[in-house]
Every structure is written in structure tokens, then in C-alpha cells.
Image (cartoon, rainbow, N blue to C red; front, side, top):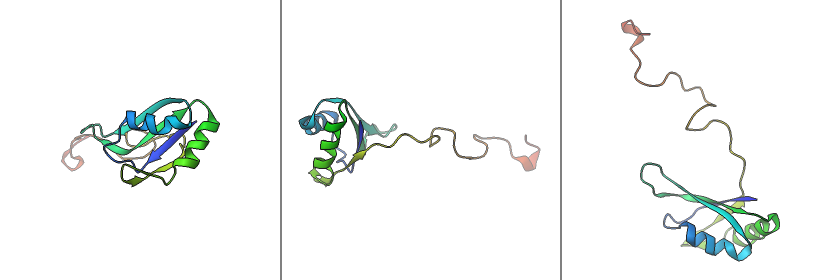
Length: 106
């Protein structure tokens, strides 16, 4: 089961999260989400457990708990939705620097 861990301190890293959530069972993966331009944490991560019961125990124990000066938001991660900022899903119109239609473009 994959968990969403939100409201993280921007200084929180994978090793701290592995230590924190490892108390509840075997953590199979941790992904701290970072800004692609700055490399800085966006304040949330995904923690995956190989055992659903261990993941549920982590949710029960850690949701709302203080970590790094902030109260964590921990719940089961929702599946990714189609679309989003990197493509598909929304009609955004033409991209790029196309020619002006009023001046004989396209």
C-alpha cells in the first residue's frame, strides 16, 4: 500500500522518513517529491509498504502527529489522475509561439 505523507518540513528527506515509518514495518520505497527546477522538496512524499496492515498502522499512528515542527497528513495515496501539468486531460489551446492569426498566420 502506498501512503501520501503531506505537510512535511521542506528539510525532511528520505532517510528521516524511512526511520520514522520503518517503525511500523517494511518500507519498500520512499519518494520525496521535489521541484524540478530547484530540487527543493515540495513538502510531501509517498511511502510504500509491502504489507497493507503495516501501512494502516502507520496511518493510524502518524496522521496528525508532529514531525519536524509540522503536523503530518498521512493517508492512503490515491491513484494518479490522467492529465495534469505534463500533458493530456485539459484543453489548453495551441502551445508555443505560433504566428499571429491576424497577420496571416497558420
